[in-house]
Length: 418
Image (cartoon, helix red, strand yellow):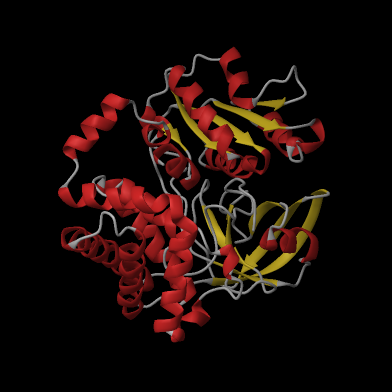
């Protein structure tokens, strides 16, 4: 199974795989990435709807036996509905924990309509590429209820079942509606030919592809990628450049241990190979209606969307102050520093600082404390989960309001609320 990584790496923990409840990164506020205080949790509990209370009680009951729940769910699904098995990856070990993570996300935010709806709409649009149809959802719901009732029997009853039926009906309808709307304006996936493959380090490659038809996206967003070597297994990667006039797309991919897709893209893919792309998504984009400065933290291959944001500012002819902190473990891991320094030379409003762990054992979020003030900046974070977690904390203490801290990381949402 792929190891946890960033939005630009082969993310086996929170992204990818097949099925209908595959988690995808969702736009969340910094508040959602910060653990609640006991007082906040008590207040939230008082405001929770009756269905939310029952759903969360069920989740608390099944979390300790998550593996058994997910195994039983898939066994039930494939025995009762064998016609659905071809929609999933051949090796289900890459899929096992996806369902529970998605359910945790939906359950924890059942009363937070904007967050939950945005998440489910992304999920619905993204699942078009798996061949998911509206008629598949009842089968999933039936087996989900079956698995929950078996493993949450201590808290299960008619009221809890009714709450889950209502919750699942709402979840599935939002996904179905989003998919239907998306079908009117975009394909389920795009084919893209690899036109260049540059190995920057032994485990990091820069890939440029040409989609078979126009591919609209915004700088700072990401997409899902499927390779011909691992059918029906998708991984998320950020775009490493702003939209280009020639229509080409660039990705930075790091091969992670046991990462099926990332290792294929880094070590096996060559020009001429054809991959598939899912729809673009993500909210870590620039608001061109303001003149605020940008504070950007990019760790490892997380520098990819940061580079795209810088290009986006330049192409809009803006001269907003942009401060980029580029973090890595060693100097050798700063694989794209030359590109960033060239951008700095061309744009006087841009400042790039490279921060490595070798520098007095400093980590990227800690380094920004030495600069500032940042209270007038919009902040963007992309990188490993730990960096995002500590970065959000540092930025909030530096005076940046929560609604001006942007990142796309489902892992942070789940970690903060589980």
